[in-house]
Image (cartoon, rainbow, N blue to C red; front, side, top):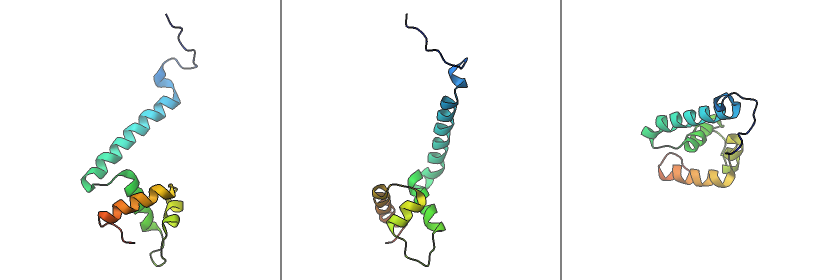
Length: 91
């Protein structure tokens, strides 16, 4: 029989890492459910929300948006293309 790993926790459910994992999964599921009627992913929503907080009077570059939202610039470009195809943003 394999030896049980020794930990400081009585039960796996007592582990902060496992608790955080469970909360994160539940939160992500809630976000997906809330955004599903709008046909948006979480990252699409984050980038749209970030656009609302940036100065509307100044042209916003993808780099500006990526920095503000703390997203990868290449991924930001792909998501913006998708949002553009959905007619939610204009370049």
